[in-house]
Image 1 (cartoon, rainbow, N blue to C red):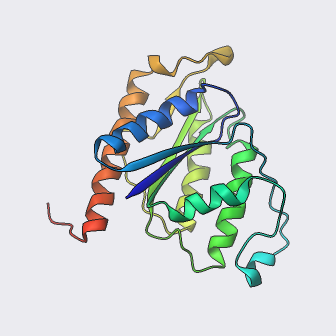
Image 2 (spheres, rainbow, N blue to C red):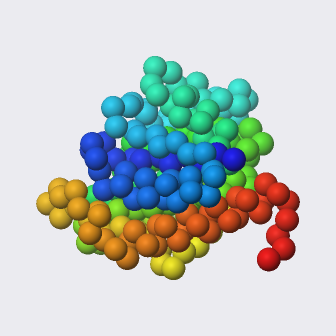
Length: 196
């Protein structure tokens, strides 16, 4: 089993990466292989609505970093997507990736279906829930299974650009519990057993 975490922040040592790393560490402790994928330093062009993917079953936009990340998304059993929240929504570079990945998956047999995953959103004070909902819609339309936690997977950090996620004890515990539930579910699905 393998899970990936995709960090939508362009900042080095970002708060978003901090929470994703906590989730991935929890999965690793349960013997699930993980990989953190940062969009920092990468270019993901937006979807152009060309609909080439309907017939070709792939995205035809070229000369960016989409294909390598997309291949890892297809191969993973679990996907966690983390986004900073600046103006009550998912950051554009991450939505470009998700729009294109979702479009190709929709017209290619919905191969994200029954993968396990969920979102993590990070903001200074507010806007988490709108971005969190935006990401949940992506998981749901792709037929993915999203386990819950003790609260929504939101982190509070970054006032005036601070990198202080480590001070958000409740957010850390929420993300860890989400990852524990994700690991449990992935193990059950791979074994084909839902007893106890």
